[in-house]
Figure 1: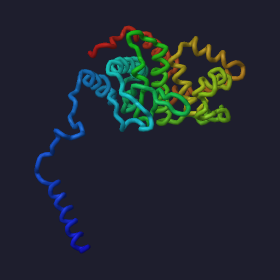
Figure 2: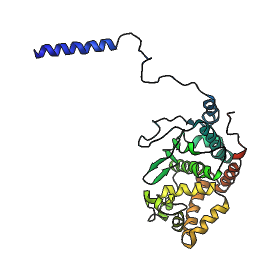
Figure 3: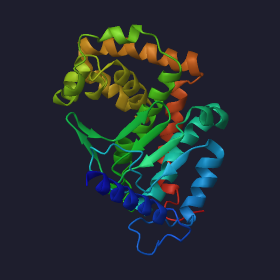
Figure 4: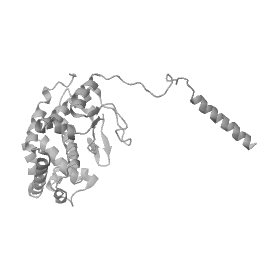
Length: 293
């Protein structure tokens, strides 16, 4: 009796395989999966001309969960804000480096993918405004909060310009190592993920240019570059003045290593890069951010 039941079961399974492998067309009308491919729109074509062709960089503004961490509750970027942001990023970040060292160098070292995210991702240490992964991918968050009808350059600077220069510095550091002496200067003062419990002034007095710089040495280094080039000389000097007699000598020592690294390893004069970035930031109001040309 048991053998008979086994034979019947095997015949049923075999029949199922036969029915699944016949030549009948699959009924896609009732499928729960959307297999249609979207036609490229005007923005897709603009990205091809302005990012893919000159820089070999793919920009994803539609949310792709294969490029993000599933532990975050994320939403897609608003289309109009994505258009405006990528115009600003190209003008203020990528073309700033083009102007300084040529498009060939920019193309070589920029990440291969930029993923835009509509909202902020939160971790135990605070908000994530940007992430870089292995020099190949950069994620930019908080796109939907931007108001390009009332441009706030300080907000753009905090959310994006500083983030882009910060993450790009990581990419450069991963390609060519900086002087390890930098890591030892504040080695005993880094606090890891609890950096957000430290005020900016207290961080400056410890010799770190921001409270986030107190996370670890690599973040400290990237913060030095990004804050230097995205702030005016007066703003930089103000930060140093807040550091006082204890923090300022440490910041000066760190900056010397940072400046020499960028100059000797990459041929980048940070003072010249700052002049270019500052000028381009001031040109944002002249950009057409609402149409695709």
